[in-house]
Amino acid sequence: MEYLKKVELFFIQLQYCLTIEPEPVLQAEKGVYSLSLEPDIFFKLINDFQIDYPFIPENKIIELKAIMNKEGINGNDALRVIENYKKQYWFLDSVIIFEPVTDKLKRTLKRIDINISEKEINIELANYQKYLQGKRENFYIQLINEIQGLTTQQAENKSDKLNTQLSKYGFFELPKIKQLSEQNKQNLIDLIIKNKMPYGIAMFDFLGFCEYLDREQGTKYKADNILSKLFNEKAKDGTSAKHYRRSLIKSTSPRYKAGDYKDIVQKDYKELK
Image (cartoon, rainbow, N blue to C red; front, side):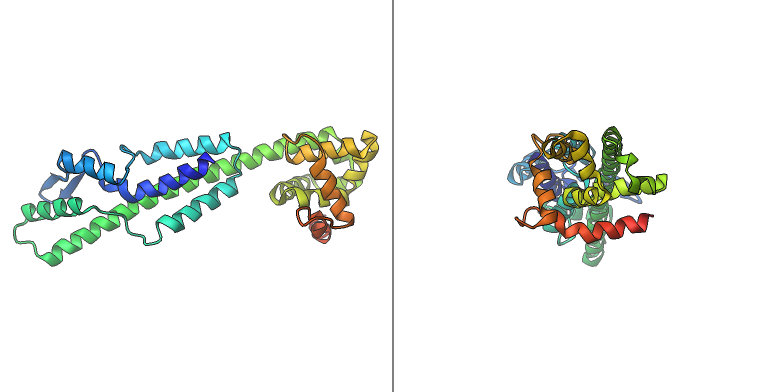
């Protein structure tokens, strides 16, 4: 999946690219000092560490959102991928500061103050590291916020689509649904979306929706097709729904576990009443 590769590159690049800027500078009391490296050193670092130069994190975040939509990745899954790569590549907290950059910074500090001590230089280097860590963390927070915003939008879109489809098939005319307030009807939809198909089939069965569809559609085959498409609009047939419904009667495969949710859905429904 392209999303996995791009997220991994995002975290790898932010380990290296923050000290490789077009015009890096050091702001001091006496003015602004250039930290630019010699061209040969600059391009050697880019080649040796395969730095995607210029790496613009804001643009990469936009790209990740587009890929996430294109590949139909669930927002919560996208966030888990981000957290996993963060743990893998940022486990030491520190940002990579290349030796030529460190040397340049030391020379610049000595040019500003010829009497500066090694202790003071080390303090400035530590401060520079903290600055880079803060900058990197800001990009991470920006990425999380953007993905969370997209996740909320995805959930709202899914909710609207499911409400429309359920209305089409008479779901909201079921006796157990009519007993719920409008807010709790929406809360029920949110539960079905959040907990996915095994839970959803178990809930639909408890509410009498599966039986209602069987009767209205004339055959279980047609009803299963509808149920499968409620959870996956690209479903070719009703195979998934058929197996999940069977698991409510007898567990035949560890893959289909709607039966595990029979007591849970009844409890959740009672809490909504």
